[in-house]
Amino acid sequence: MSGFFGMVAKRDCVMDVFYGTDYHSHLGTKRAGMAFYNKQKGFQRAIHSLEDGYFRNKFDDDIKNFQGQIGFGVISDHEAQPILVTSHLGRFAVVTVSKINNIDELEKDFLARRCTFAESSQGAINPTEMIAKLIAECDDFVSGINNVFEKIKGSCSLLLLTEDRIIAARDKVGRTPIVLGKRSDAYAATFETCAFPNLDFEVEHYLGPGEIIEFSAEGYKQLQAPGKELKICSFLWVYYGYPPSFYEGINVDDTRYRCGAAMAREEDVKADFVAAIPDSGVGHAMGYSNETGIPLKRPYSKYTPTWPRSFMPQNQETRELVARMKLIPNKAVIKGNSGVFIDDSIVRGTQLKDNVKDLQEGGIREIHMRIACPPLLFPCKYLNFSSSRAKLDLATRKAIFDLNGEEDPDYASYCDSRSRNYQRMVNQMGKNLGLTSLKFLKLEDMIKAIGLPKEKLCTHCWDNSGKDD
Image 1 (cartoon, rainbow, N blue to C red):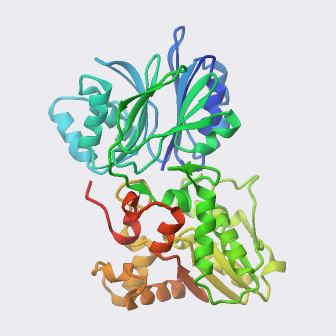
Image 2 (image 1 turned 45 degrees about the vertical axis):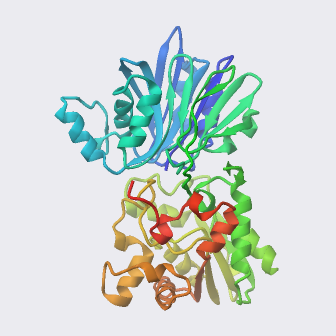
Image 3 (image 1 turned 30 degrees about the vertical axis):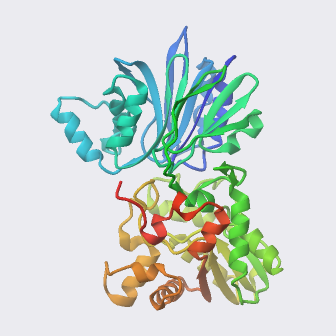
């Protein structure tokens, strides 16, 4: 996943864009970049790796030299951004939240026309440069953005920075959000609305699917009306989103509270405490605890001063060590007790298995794991989540393989929480992870907790729904 923040103001906006972008640090793990424009310096840009440090530290020296009343920043899980290009449309910069499944096909088409690519990402074409080229193929920015929407398979939301305005375009079916904010001297566009309050912005407009707007410090104008089809990622509320943020006007932490309460209403276990797997499990655990009356306790404390981000080290072995070292068990809560543990999801289950081992070594009596979404059975086709992993890396697929000795049977019955195969899969997952019991939130209860109709949500990870786009 990635996230971005862009702003046009009546005064210098460098520090505001810096802080607005920093509020997206939970979304990206690899690269971050910022770009600004002013008449004296022209376009200014910097890109840094986040694998060995924080966004705010990496850009300390850059922000001292940046100047501009217009600019944006991005924190990315993969490619280096922003991309700065010179074209017949003029000079512009682009940041994206995107996944291009057919990038190899598009690359071959460009190369056949003797086009060149200047950027790379992990040994391949930089997806944001590909999007910039698709835009520049057309006669104007709106046509170019629609060219992106028509030609890529996957998803793309973007901000485009020119000398005097920012153009914001939300993915054609709205899989990821863009929200416009307003204050007396500026307008801003953001992925996460949690970037707004401390910068004194109020939400002005939630962009619809495929909607394109442009804005300056004076106001905004719609360049393309939204389409009718919305398929926003459900996982934004369950896992990705920061608790104070809103998508489609629906708050993240309120939704997590409702997810936890919905799980609690299906519960028959009597435990000594309820606990969150930090951090995204906290809102779910609060809802569960308040609904059941079981006290919320903290058997783990997250130590962040020197172990802030488990993804920073570049090799998996060290990442797993950091992930374990930053969670400190508290035996006073654990020993001899039965606990209900709430987490947002199980993907591979590697870190969860380590947590279970720590709890067992701490003398826990029972471990009842409750997951605030259905079992993840299908790698995401639309966002950069779980897509790089082999299918058998998913804890669900491994459990099914353990049961059947088959890698790819018909998975439809495993999606149905009322089926025997579903229960067999969940029981096997619990066994593989060393749990006393394991339960997942039902799909219909998760959808109800979010508060949008199912047809407006992407639920592909859980039920294989969605077009092949």
